[in-house]
Image (cartoon, rainbow, N blue to C red):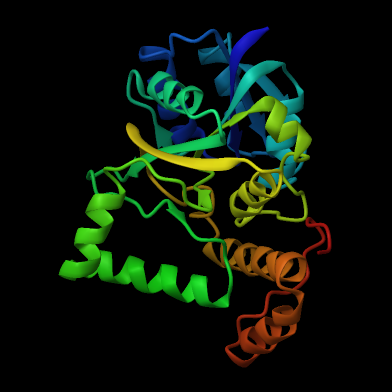
Length: 280
């Protein structure tokens, strides 16, 4: 059995996908590994381009935009490995980062999953971990992000300490999420009710419910260009986010789901149903 499967979901991100694959090929992990690209019905020639330029990469074609969770699950189940790395197509992986991330996870026997420090193309740090989502924690996360962006000293100092210290948050970002296959399989992998957004927080919650910890480690750093799959249709991406948010509250905070729907309707942000997505 190979040690690591790197699963990358792509939807019309041909240029970013090539940059991501190039980074993995120019600085490949020392761990025995396979790279799997799952294509969600792209119309930009991504599949042909990957097969031409990267013949060693496995390609799984969904034939439609099945959503991030369903596509990730298909990629995970298409191969066998001890570890699975969920990796966004809009990431650049520096040499050694995957090995350091895997080493950190292996050293923490109680952790089932680990996430690295994420930075943007200018080196700015991303808030890529947090507490379990709830009405209060969502507001807290947004306020922290605003304070970090504004450079407010107490919060900026707290953030600087957090991103340089290993710790165990409730979740880490699915943009680069390493998980032990046995633990992920026991948790049922990603909940396919979440078409796009929220599936990483939900998955980490399932791992924690089984008694595992989630690890954030600064030992590894990955560049995350953020939101490129939704850049071509931002209205659709916003609607997908809201549908996933509603699905999350229906599952985890059912008493608040109705309040959230009323709030979104009052602001004109309640998403229309989508025939592509399963109902929550």
